[in-house]
Length: 251
Image 1 (tube, rainbow, N blue to C red):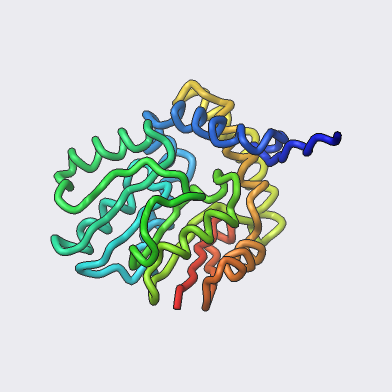
Image 2: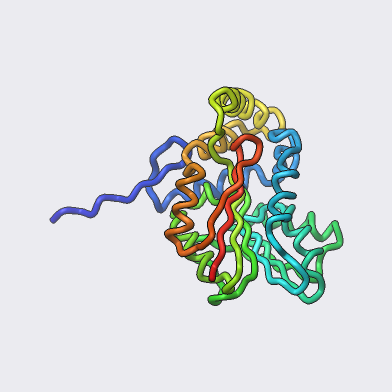
């Protein structure tokens, strides 16, 4: 009797069993949670704040909306959405990693943002909400860490309200060869060193660099969103395609 071959996936450049990836990614983010905000500013030279600002500007979030900030980590987007939706709206900061949620909750509480934010530990592939629950879903720098991205996109589509939109902010593929080469040098030489010096963790930042290269490029991700049911899907390259902001609607 033939055994069913074990399903595999990528963890950075390594091939691992599909059912092991989530715990391996969890270990990475448990490790980096405490220094996450500091490293984001250092790694991107602060430009991540502009990328997130563009995401918020593209979200159409307004008073009374229900928003899911998926893989929301330390809550940068949640903080702004909380102000935009007001007392009549609600923001859910969702993350699979308990350490990231803890850091995010403490940070937002310290900012005085407590009235309209819920914190939920969740897996993007199996979102624990009824159909048609949210006006807007964002996932910033989280989709590449999801094992089954197609399943996650279908789950997001299911819980969006008709007329709602998904925004995916993620590292992507630079559009110019010179930029791509410089970015590769930075990612594989300077990034792990920075991680070692600041967070005492070079391996997690090596994984970060590798996971970016294994993530679908701009057109592939757009096609995946189309396949999941999203309509009017578009993307905008930011910083020469180092990052792309994808948008899709549910009608």
